[in-house]
Image (cartoon, rainbow over all chains, first blue to last red; front, side):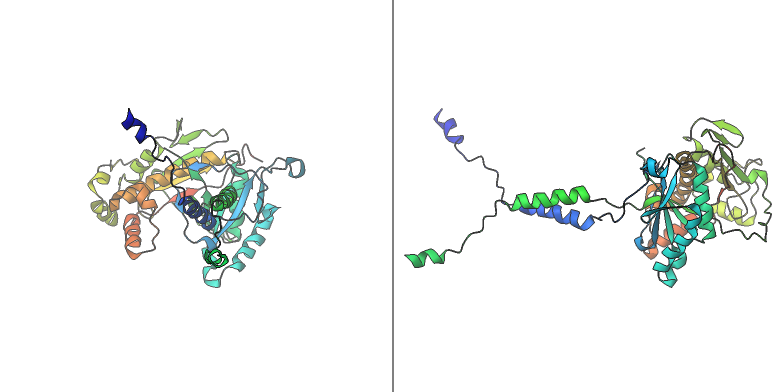
Length: 152
Length: 213
């Protein structure tokens, strides 16, 4: 009996002195990976799923176009709209927008511009093909259908 | 006695350090959006000159693998109705590697393939001649009312067929092949060796004006 009671007297404290370090490590990880969103997404974004995804390496060459039903249907209606930067634009404004995006790049990289088409899965092919037609006109032919990974 | 008190450096309590760090951590956890640049790559055709009609390219019907998706998201593959896309990539692989009527270059290409891909060549005269330039083309045609999700699902399967062929040629899995970036010469060499002679020939037709707006 005496033996058992002695053993229970050992301290049960978990050393917590390393806890701040662990938390700091996590903190630094998230601080480094975080990208504060500079723009509000005005359209719905439920990206479609696919399996054959490829990753783009050079982020500076990518420009984003968002497509989907507006979140604020009272103001913008229910038809799918295109968002570039912060505003909703019309299909015919795409050429202008592409040229503005190209101007941001250096001359050597201009023809390598890639448009990441972030389209909602509910969108029909009509608006998509209109956008693609305008992108062809603007000579920005590399596009990326942004999608999330489907678990097989 | 007063002196001995001064000798002890004042201690800052570090007990709340973890709490402060936690607070910051939670802030960044909430605001973070890990940007993903993942997706399916596609190259659009060059723009059309309105004064110059597109050149008539003569392709034999047997060299085109037709995939039609209508406004109800139903699939018509090579003239036959299909319920789902599960088997689509295998069909495309068989079509691409058919070698029905190969010319000299295509025979050389065939001989360079690994045995597993050679086995897929059925040499069916009604299917594609060879997968090289001027040979097999996969055509996807949609309506304006087709959903984007379905279109991407079909395109995904077509890409899958190609990547599986490329990966098989260099002895990788399709996932490993897709992860190649071409940054190092060794990776670039692998990518080129996979693609050599079998260009990605996916033709995406302008959608019909049915069921859309």
